[in-house]
Image (cartoon, rainbow, N blue to C red; front, side):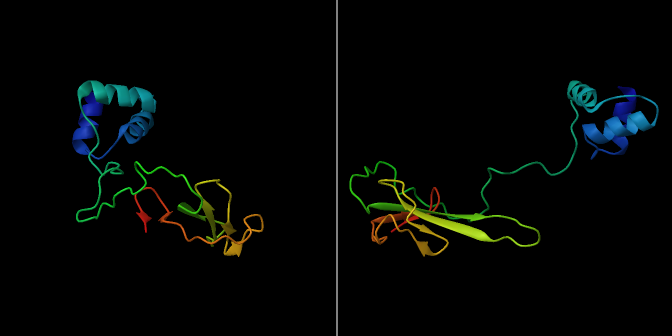
Length: 136
């Protein structure tokens, strides 16, 4: 634990993986899980960027979810679309789907109309392309 403390004092940006590798290279066999347990016991953690997936950017507009509390009771009332990017080599072609919420049938794909929906249009009340991005 003294060597972990000395190593962490020299390089406070080392995490459990780098500390375990450095100590193993110095002749102290130590795996990552033990290094993490000892670091936690000592109350130290690496300095550096942490995941910030839930923090919104400053000034980011929060859109209301327009479908909350809405009862979908008629055809063409709410439509949804999905755009998916599929990485293939150096390209990322995308595929899109358009479907109504009343029967979940895919009514359009990649700009092509569906033959089973008999040409009904997306003249619904709302278009919900992602949670929080419903628009009229």
